[in-house]
Length: 617
Image (spheres, rainbow, N blue to C red):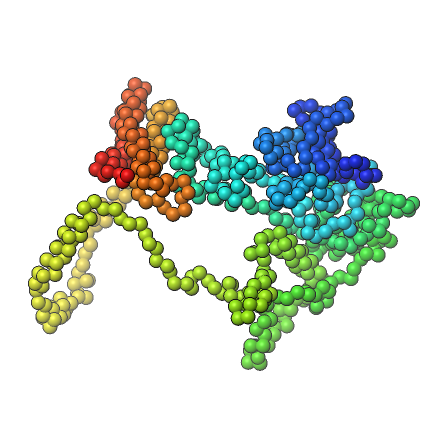
């Protein structure tokens, strides 16, 4: 069986060693170790560590993708974003196991650092390592359900905050801005052209783009939960036809958590202190060949293997009777929420209703009952672990005050029936329309409406109108039968649609004869002008709610509008330069002018508004 690094269970040295692996740092081979106080790396041939990182300085964790040529891990520090990069030098399967051990332990450390707890000399959570010959597996009874779930977490996302930046302020977080720019190359190019060049400020650039930062913050705050797959180790066939099961620390931990009887068997038969006891390798080899393992398989077909495997005097003692009775062996001992209890309304359905359908009872196929209940118990464990790790607002059991007497009640049903769609819509105040010559406009409208109302309407005789309508409808069926639709209109419409489709196909298949450098200049000019237009109009009109970057001072808004108008005034010069460059490169200048005409029209409209409207001081 494959083996990897594990925490040493020897006598207590000055610093307890949890993980150890061969790793290179800056292409220099050495030994990477994780103790109860530090993460340290020591170069081969030296006794003193060259890199020593306290637990409290760990801020973020990265790792290479699965299948990469090298197995790498990077740890970021609180005051050093670059951090340290380590490359595990063991063979690929062993290196992956070693890296997962470090990731699991470092994830817990970084999680405690972020939660504000003191991580100075705290003990790491007990986890079950891979069995090796040099050190026994730690006792499984040390595993606690609350900490078991932390070992399943993936690497900690790299959203460590810059010192001085509040964690709950994603709008001003520089790291979130950097991530958004890296994910959107077009936005990054615009940021480089406008912000880095000093044409607009950082705050002006992100004004109106707060939703991108909030979405990135929400994505970074998500944590991967426990996998829903049931623990079911599958044998692998290697060279020579040999069948084996790779035992990893995660697999051992999952087996102990899913099947406590295996943890009990391990604790009672692998003390490694008395003669006649099982070793690590013997324990797992005999377990995977025993009836106990086959009873834990996540398939109904596994029950047939019990008639093939041989008896085992040790593991057969831990076999349990199949849970195939009508009532499950483990009854639920907790209250069920009324809205989820299917039997809560049983008393409302008396004899007037149909009798129970006995064919719908579980257990018609008796061999499927243990498997169904095993899946149900596994799902229940997943839900409980998710509720224990999630915020209190998402848990099903909520204690709240009863509005009648103020007492704490275990269930609060009112928020579940208080739906937003049942509330009356609240009218929005809207944005006040700032019109030029508003008084004259409304006075003119009032005069037109008054004149129209004063005009005498012709009197309509209802009897005469009804008689005329009856006369028009006489013989309608004969007239409808004589109706003939000429094909000329239909053919013209079909021809127009065909020509439209042909023109679109011709545009798509036509080769673009504009050189890449000219096209890049056109795209850069258009995106920059669009950004200036956005900044100009946001400074001219009232800001939208929830825009912290928008200037609130009228003088600041006026100065910003004037600055953006100055940039927009140069757009025609930039377009003319691009047209001359395209003509020099042999491109028809009409194509460039047609392509840039929409943005020039938008700029002209903005400049016309700026020239006729004096900004408020």
